[in-house]
Length: 560
Ligand SMILES: Cc1cc2nc3c(=O)[nH]c(=O)nc-3n(C[C@H](O)[C@H](O)[C@H](O)COP(=O)(O)OP(=O)(O)OC[C@H]3O[C@@H](n4cnc5c(N)ncnc54)[C@H](O)[C@@H]3O)c2cc1C
Image 1 (spheres, rainbow, N blue to C red):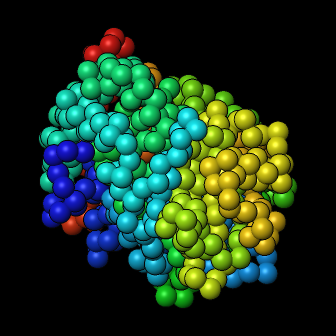
Image 2: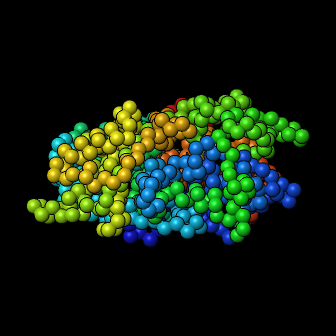
Image 3: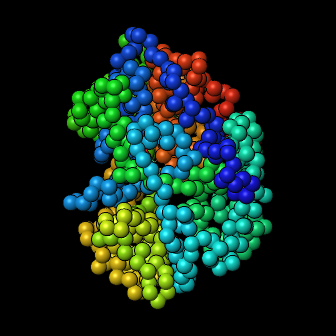
């Protein structure tokens, strides 16, 4: 974005724009997240899902003196899934889900630090950590270190995007307010944008911009995107989804986790929260299996209880439960009471739209791409963005004498669907064919030393896709889901069951958002069990009314 350089001392963080609450400050405050009444200490709380949000919630609940009981259907980590190659170092990971994290994810960074994890610069296109980049479109390849090495139309597209954000999305004002953490200024700009753009697709937004009158520019922009790879598979999504990413620098300066991103949820499970006991210890060393049914029952006080049946045949009842799986699981996998949620929330869950995503990884003997081609003086192979089937190829170097990992292909939506019928070897063959057309003299296959790995999130049993993406007109649904933790607005019979995780987040597809919703649920559970935040460290529900997301009315441009 044009108005601020990276040298600005005020960091741009994922602070809002929908709900500008400082989660990073809240979790790192020395007074902690609140307290629970003496008589409620040790209360069991069901945490459904052992991904990042479930385990963050479990860890924080345990610190507060509660007993989280974790249910996980698949494996600890969820979409922080780092596959390893048998017989090789654990450092060599294929990041099947989340693989790169912006420094603007400051709450996530808090947990990386707390769990002793290190990060490294991720080799995105044209980034400083990337030796070279090849952009291959319409049969023409361009070798580059910076955007200035590319033909002039690439620079024109970059400028058109900056100018569009400045002229049509108040980008400078919004980012300035985020840097200042000025919640009221953020709300003023963002409310206006929500009014104007909830009905608009990303593609519609571009076509409405005088800077993108050229179809060729829109096409090029779709293929190359604005930092990490092509964004044309996002063209049908709501423009608000894109603005949330660009205005909070979520797509900038990415870092990878040394040794694999799954270590964060695994360490939240294994690391003592009080110097002695871990969440795993509280669970007797094992999480419970998949949840198969959730019933709303009632306790001796007449208040709601949540009776949970699991795949091991066990039934347990809790005064509070947090659900962190993809929300459609409540419709197609778990047998839920109809009245578990208010009908408006069910509607919002039903409308959830998911993006598919597939990845294909190979392990190679060494980072051969760094060899110089004597004829051209260029790297043998480069980080590659292309309109061919592979779309994005990322090269993950672990030192000159070590095996290395290639993400041969990372695709979304339609591009991912096209791969579904193919098994892992067929996928590898297809990607090697694509890359063979770009690098005819490089025998990538001869370097492959292990069975390739692949995933398509839309066919994983306990997932609906890679992540939710709101379509135009979905703002109202999203607002209901995100604010579900503030339950004083709900009928008492609907209190105590909390939706959290990536689906509930304003920035689905970004771990920071999933974390934020887990922390909202923690606040909600504390309140539900009669506890409270410390006055010195108010939580998201305590300041809710001052910073609540705008509520749209029935008519376009009207407020509820
Ligand atoms: C391909 C891909 C790329 C991504 N890239 C990035 C990135 O670069 N940067 C970034 O910040 N984020 C990225 N993300 C998003 C990030 O991975 C998520 O935001 C985060 O991991 C979500 O955590 P969660 O706990 O909300 O959900 P999940 O990780 O999905 O956890 C939910 C858990 O619930 C379990 N579950 C489901 N049904 C049941 C049941 N019936 N009973 C018990 N358990 C159940 C699931 O098995 C799962 O483990 C990416 C995700 C994907 C898939």
